[in-house]
Every structure is written in C-alpha cells, then in structure tokens.
Image (cartoon, rainbow, N blue to C red):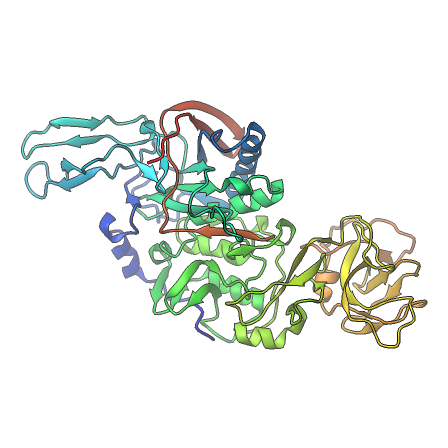
Length: 554
C-alpha cells in the first residue's frame, strides 16, 4: 500500500471509548461544544435500546440578502430532500428531552467550593453563540449563562436566561447561503459549499452543525444541489477528520484510522480483497496530512470524494455508510445505498497499481474525447496536478441519454444510448481516424450480451473487450470490457418488457464538478431573532423551519 491514510479493521479498543468520555472541551477541535443530553438510559451503548430514524431540525437564516425568492425556495426544497434521505439512511438513540445547546461564553469556572464547576467570569465581548463564524444560533435554542460567586447557591448575574430548547430532535442543522472568503469571490474553481460540526453530546455524537451553500451554487440543477447538501450533511454528522478519533469502534494508529468491523467488511467485499487484513477505504492525503474525504481515484464517484461528479454519476456507497455505523452512534439502512461499481472486484491494489492495471478507466491524451467509466457520458481528460493518474470526467453536455443533434454522422442520442470508443466513418480515408467517445444505441440480451446500433445499421453483437466492424462504415467500435456495467444482473423479480425480439430486452446500466469541502477548521454564518414555523413532514421525519430575520455579520 502507498502512503494513503486507510480506514481498516482493528480490535475494539475499550480503553479508547473510556478515554473519549473524559475529553474536555479544550481538548477538542476549537469551536465544538460538548454537553450531556437525556437518553432512554444513561448508557446509550446498551444494545437493547431501539434505534429510531434520526430527527433533524433545520434552522435557516434569512437568505433574502443574497438569494431571490425563487432561489430560496430551491434551497429549502433541496435541504428537505437531503434531510429526508438522511433519515432513511441513519438511525440513532432518540433524545428524550428538548435539546439545549451549550454556550461557550464562560471564561473561568470555580475549581473548589460549593460552586465548583459553575461559571466564575464571562469572556470579554461575548455577545452571542456563533456556529461556523457567522451563523448566530437563536437564544431560544441555547442554555442559560450565569455567574456565581464563591459560596452563594444562586447566581449573582444572569447573562442569558435559559431558552426553551428544541423538542423532538436529535440533530440541529443550521443552513445559510452567504458569499464568504471560503466561497472564493474571483476563484475559477469556486467552492460550492462547506460545513462544520458545532456541538456534540456526552458520547461525542454530533448534535448540531452548520452548512453554508455559497450563493453562486444555488442555481445548479436541483439534483446537483441535493447531492451537494447530502455531502455536507454527512460531514456535519461526523464524516470528518476531527471526529474519526472519537469513533467508538475506531482508533488512530500512525497513518491509519482502524475501524471494526463494518468498514473493513464493506471495503473488502467491494474491492474483492480478502487476503489483506488491513485493506480498507482510503482517505485523501498522505501520511498524517489527510482530509475529510475519500481518495478521489480509488473511491471515484463516491459522494464523499472532494470533487463530486455530475449528480447522475455520484453515489451513496455502502463503504461510506459503514463509516457511520462504525462510529458507534448510528445504525445504517444499507438498503437505501446506491449501486456503486467503481473498482468493483479489482483486488488488493493501491492507487499506483490501479493506474497501471486499469487502463480502461484512465485517460492519457488531454485532447481526445473518451467515455466516462459508466458509459453514460462522453468524457474529457481533466488535469489533476496532484494525481498520479487521470480519470475520464463526464463531459459537459456529453450525456448520451439526452436526445440532441449528433457530433458524428453515425451517432444516436437517446434514453437507451451509451458512450463507446469508436472511429466509424463513411468517408474514404487513407489512415484510420482517431478513436473518440461516441454515442450509440445499446440493449442487452437475456444472457447479458451487449448489442449496439448506429445510425442506419442493424443491431450488432458487441463482444466485451473485442473490436466490432459495422457494415457500411470504415473503422471499428471498441466494445466495452465490463459486463457488470453495461449489462448488469437484474433482480429476480424484474419484469422484462416485450421488444421486437423475444430474447432481447432494452435497459441501460444502473448506476460536475462539485467542489464541496468539509472545513472542520472553518466556522459559518450569523444573525438575530427568529419566527418559528414547524410542520410534520413525514411519518418518520419531523423538520422544524426557523426563519431568522435579522442579518448581522459578526
């Protein structure tokens, strides 16, 4: 293995769990408050407790400052969809009482006497509680802040009264959309969004976090905005380098985050690597300088890579979900995971071996149009200075499945079209034309053989990994190598529609740049009073929407 940080399996370290429960706020990442919540029993590690779908309350700051009414509605719709998906994926021990977030305004506490542990003095200039630098948490969601003298049982000063708290919730999500330095005012590769965990409970599970969706990204397609928010929600729920060390079934060893047993199980099952006991899912980075994302080559297409692709080629994979279950905080419904085929059964290889062995995935010529590995899109070779190899990225407006005018005479764009490498032409040429990605019709036989059709031709068998000549054309088609991608196995209960041939069926395989970051060291967005609006969204999901009207940059 190379120097990538890898999530692997290890023995359960009981001592790590005990030590985690005695960490002080000062030992944690700056700006993250730790506090005690009320659960069904005092020890939530008790396996007899019933997990329930996580309840998330969303708090919006008034976003009219930079967003139009239409953009704001688009944002709220995407947030709702992302939160609903998370509630399908993750379950937690339900919090029993209203959540009151802890204030960070106390400067010193009494260390002895009857008021030991109570606040002795307040931080200078403390005015409000901020999540991610700019989001002012409503006072009604916060615990009180009081000052005591050395002996009296009652406080001598009430700085802030205790709020009512947030009922029927397990996690509070603060959402904003404001242009910041992090968004990149004039940058070519602008960040679309970023996030941070702000509060955790006594077991280190995140209970509040903040997401800032940079305004320039709100007008992306609804599906792209939804996937961006899912990515950030995963960060706020714990997929972050600052929180891996607090996972109950994980421990940091040198460059490895050793997790047991689900990350190892899912990684080995996916890659088909069962001979190495330490083969796990790789994080981006080298040595101890790792990030809060998967490696962008070995986990290409996962929702938790730093540069997500177009939404139709970005997936919620089982390996990512296993991280949450290994945290000890969540139960995961793997049935809600997406089909993820990148690197499937490629064996125990690291990035350098991957680039050498799997040339079908790798592009070498920057100027030649190829195919994305799922063959749904034409692909371009994106320059990545920090990568040892480059992967074909979906070409903008290169979706084969969307009808449009062809780029080549024999192309057919449509719902059943796919990308294949070809140099077909009807022109007479002395030299063979350059092979490029082109869109043709596809269908699969009942025994999963691939057939293709170009403009003016009949259906032709396209043997995997072979060259195919088409009558009436010069040149050839390079048939794809992967049966699992082109003609995946259908579930036993799949109804096969009738076609012009009894042994042939139509179906396409199941399966831009979103520069989305978890800035665990970055904090988020501000404000003032709130008007409460709450509603029951679904039987398993309760979302409360708070509209925070005043805009105040802190």
